[in-house]
Amino acid sequence: MARSAGAQEEIRRFLDIGAVQVAELDLDGDEAVLRPGPGSPPVTHGEVFVLVRRGGRPVGTLLGRVPEGVDPRAVLAERARAECGPAVFGEPGEPPYASVVVATRERAGQLARALDSLLAQDHSRFEIVVVDNAPVTSETRELIERKYAERVRYVCEPVPGLAAAHNAGLDAVRGEVVAFTDDDVVADPRWLTELTAPFAADTGLGCSTGLILPARLTTPAQVLLESHGGFAKGFTPRTYDPAHPPGDEPLFPFTAGRFGSGANMAFRTAVLRSVGGFDPATGAGTAARGGDDLYGFVRVLAQGHRLRYTPYALVWHHHRETWRDLETQAYGYGAGLTAYLTAVLVNRPALLPAFLARLPRGLAHARALTAVRASEGAAGGGTPGDHDVRTHPWPRRLSRLQRRGMLYGPVGYLKARRALRATARGAR
Image 1 (cartoon, rainbow, N blue to C red):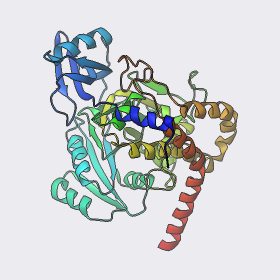
Image 2 (cartoon, rainbow, N blue to C red):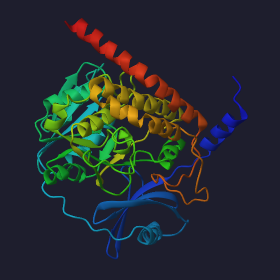
Image 3 (cartoon, rainbow, N blue to C red):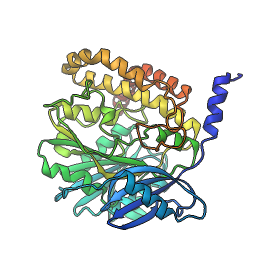
């Protein structure tokens, strides 16, 4: 089938997107330490996406260009000092005993990289539980037994789906707080401490989320995704309190995507268990395609508990690499969004009046969410991870796929529920 001129132009623009280096710059007084991002080569000339830290903590990002023959550290440090002002941090306090759950399926190589970073955490008391979801080989179990047997617990969950895997991990953990991350991340050494310390300071806290930044920006798909926000939620800590709904969030708590993402979230274990964990008919690996993390956020908030976003809890995420990956992701995000809303209303019908009251604004929000996003800052002022400035236009096809996914989401959720019931009947 011949492509339209518009589609051809979108493809041309997509293929013209160049790679961007990833680096970290730690400013400490007059000193500046530049390091490549996790798994990246040393920084050289060209475009560089930089995480700026002060005292080791993330405070912002910038996109800089290093001229050939110039010291990258000097150029980027000058930009960072001009754009990222001084920051004042409080001490995080002593974090509670924590459990980390990593769900995985047939990705032993990526899993090993993630586990190595988790075992390097500076948290004083934690355990790691790997949940092998509907495995078809013994590769993951053998990896754990061979390399991590004394430090990582292995759990097998035969029912496919990310939520089912997370629930299996929730059943197995012993920590006061349970953190979840993915097998395609590299966790910053202070990730677990920063993510779990807020629970000790606030007894009403039910959930915390953290910062997700790109581990690599080597393909057009990775750069495009990060140019439109990626998974980042900014560098300002924020507490969401159902007793005092935020004035700038008229759809609260149903715009759960604003709170964080499943690759970087933690819950007070007793609170998550009290709401029944995650709905197993949501999440990747089910017909619903996603939404398990958003479901957990809303259920905890609807129970009256607070949610805390902290940018100091950082994981580096390996974004998907191809155009086809972006198509799958766009459709899955749309489906997961409406699937989780369906799940919330099915499991908590008392929320229906509040949902209906917010529905008109919700539809407007959905239209804005899936609108074609124009390029801004085309002259180079944009920063991947910055939600205010976009360096590349968002393709119309991806917006259309996300809208189609949103229409499919409730159907997918109901299909996933039927599949679970059939599985349960077959097990009897």
